Image (cartoon, helix red, strand yellow):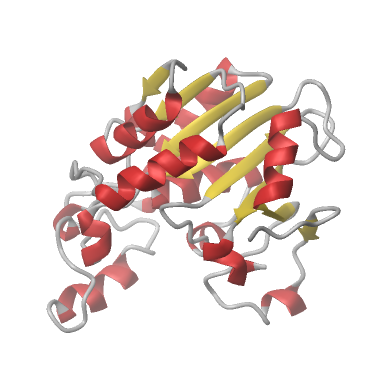
Length: 256
């Protein structure tokens, strides 16, 4: 059953409030948590609080689940495919966006992102950009984040992956990766002054997209956790600060 709200819940940055939230949750200016029904009414009618006719709406999705997601195996730049759950999640995303007039769909060049986008896009043009691909994580690609089967990786990767200058022995540093994603999202925005687009990318890629658009610190960005079936909506117009909406369904009601 969906919740029904009369207006969005807006959470603004507040240090005393942040301290009461688990680290997995995050707060940045103009983040709005929405239930499914309100979210769909908003996007279907192409109206939102305080927006102009020149609003650009970016629907930001993560690719569907892969077997390596289930195994907690680090994928990085390795080209893995969706599993059956991932394809169902992509089909569900297509259903959620049904009736929304998209001007373009963007994905990375990795199969798990492209396949998700292909399932969703219908007859909308799909553009695959290498700049949207996941962070390359060097020696850690293919390894499992498991304290029992691979305690060395479970200890080393979380520390090194947060160092902004660590290239992870053949991968990309967070600073290098951020510049790649920032340049790509600026290119995408230059192609669309208004309208609606869908971007299907990856967990860390989407963190960097949000960092670039909302001017987040690195620590704020990497604290954002988007599941494989979660959908965000970013609204951009000249007259207002950027706004971020998160689709709330039965699977993530705990985020309210």
